[in-house]
Length: 81
Image (tube, rainbow, N blue to C red; front, side):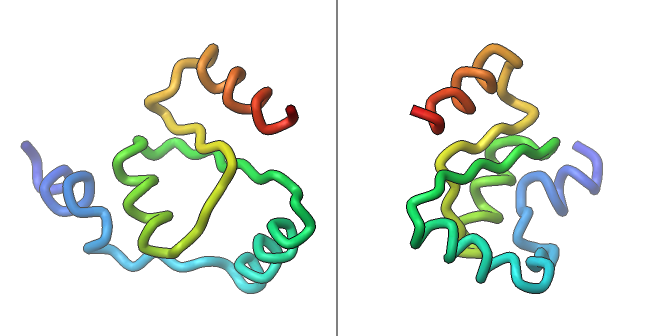
């Protein structure tokens, strides 16, 4: 395993991840108004969930590089139900 994998992939919280200004406020407002949210990322699910949990963020759908295009479409369709 190379050093990137050891440092980041296995331990994504070793690196500081922060939100852009007002993102938390916008997400809180969407949640308060019962508007569903989704996040799409090129990160794998393990890293994504670790980072989101650390930031105390919730999304109705999470699409990562681990998802097939079919699974991603299904997840996105579910949030519109």
